[in-house]
Image 1 (tube, rainbow, N blue to C red):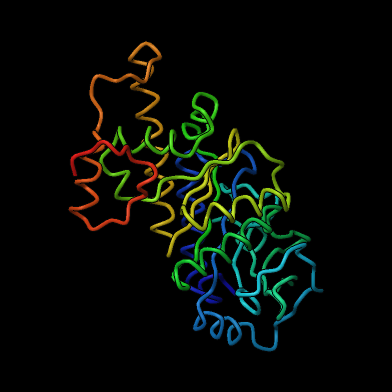
Image 2 (cartoon, one colour; image 1 turned 90 degrees about the vertical axis):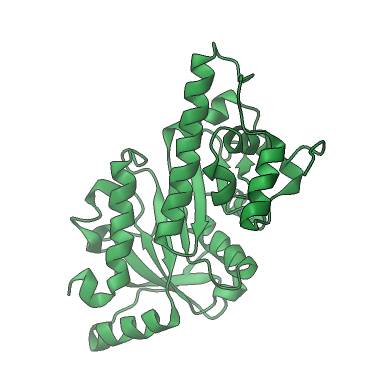
Amino acid sequence: MTSSQLLPVVEDFVQLCTDGFLQGWHECNGGNLSYRLRPEEVEQLRKSLGKSATSSEWTPLGLKADNLAGQYLITTAAGCHFQNVAKHPLNTTGIVELNEQGDAYRIVWGFADGAAPTSELPSHILNHSVRTEVTGGKSRVIYHAHPKNTIALTALLPLDARIITRSLWKVMTECILVFPQGVGVLPWMMPGSIEIARASSKLFRIHDAVIWAHHGLFVAGDDFESAFGLMHSIEKAADIYLRARSANKGSDDFPNTISDDDLRAIADRFGLAVNEAFLDDNCLI
């Protein structure tokens, strides 16, 4: 059974993996992706698997996500290389079901030849839980990658969400449109740990993008297109900031940037709920 016969959405999942790899965001086995299935997709999955359905034993998550109880997620496999996802989707991706307590999962499809879900599954689960709550169920994609310019920012700028957000907002007009609540920032923490999962989920209550210092970027989206676009926008703005700073002899005292007045004007023009804590108070608008 091909992935499209199983669920058409698997092809969209695989496509994002390929697109991210082509951007250079997934060296070696870096990065991971998950998607929370819609009810109609769960029904289609059950019909597609039919009598051939098999499930693994329940594996404790080490955390509890009550509002995800009984739900299904597609995730990338631990250690998989994104360049191989399109060629070997059965080995590099899979679908897990959460139990009725939301504290354990079992594999229902994929992860062939002994593969397992991403080691960042705890972060994905808690981030899905929070974004499901704050968006009324609209958010369905959690995407983690290693975009180089975004990572470079964490070696150069203070690990402060306001400073990094403003550095991005003020060099590219599109930024405040794409992430009006700004980006969250975490100091370096052990990847794959429950601690980084809980810290990330707290920031996802406010932001739909969270930078892990010296590691990468997590974003949330209603669909694959919005998640990829958010990642792409942040990374492009980080690239512009770094190029401008390099051309300005290492200083970020740029001759020209977007003013706070203009940022507020953009928010007003497009009806954005902008994060006022990240704007200066001495503005006219």
